[in-house]
Length: 378
Ligand code: SAM
Ligand code: SF4
Image (cartoon, rainbow, N blue to C red):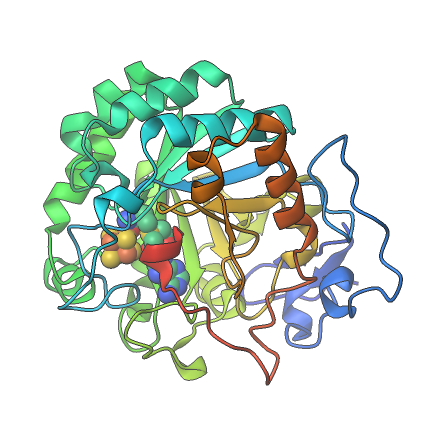
């Protein structure tokens, strides 16, 4: 029997497609990602050189995150240092032609969705030209994650170039709090960006909120109210150990379980999708009264590595098979030394094949990656 949480029952979606009771308190012990819990196989199969991009655990990769720049106009506390950022030299950043070429090769290997990210993608000059190039390739989903500061101005051009939708980061609805977390920029600009994105047809607009204990967790219910009032999908993201300041500690993580419980007490929630058919990182929940939807991204407390279908391209041309990977597969030098598409495809295959079972955040031997979030591309 399902158990109840607050006013209404809410349930975790499991990787296997079975439903686990959220209220049963099995969060920490849930073995939801069998593949992520297993050691690497002793006799791994050999890497296929045809067919989809698959790793040695059978996960097919169809989603590419492209970081278009390591630069950013903000300095969010959970991402970048306040001062003294050393940008990657321009000459080491991939050109639009180079990004387009890798995207084409990835598309041929079965990648069908691309998300542009950074750093802040909108600070890269003429980024709409890149969107147009990628738009012509014909991905079924072409999206962008942005801090929103340049979006009100650029939304119509991005939509015209072929961008389908945007995720906009906004961690607080209080101007002073926003300034404290993001260190630069203004809340009003980001709220205007949300309106502009909708007017330009970049929908559904999703709002990314990194929840940090003692910083903005008192706004969880207000942000859920914002989702209900605006129809935007607010996605609550657990704070991950990818901040440049290395201030992350477990006590600052507010679990998805707690976020859901707090909202569910006020407005009952129900499951909106199952992960078994949806590799997107967010667990989706809708309000039982039909007024909108929220998501939780539980990278820390309840990893979803078992259904991960993502690979990443950094702005300086490295393929990463995981946000938390400690090994990168450099593609830029290969590109610049006259590599064929077959050479590039082989590198992509090798990078994906080398993916570990899970990110290991909860493993005592976990090592933070050398690069922080803005350098990797979230
Ligand atoms: N600059 C854009 C933005 O802020 O939306 C795109 C890049 S940003 C690195 C991508 C996403 O990563 C944002 O939603 C941001 O809030 C999230 N993020 C950054 N650092 C994080 C961390 N340490 N833990 C969890 N999410 C983080
Ligand atoms: Fe910039 Fe986005 Fe990182 Fe904030 S989260 S510092 S906006 S890259």
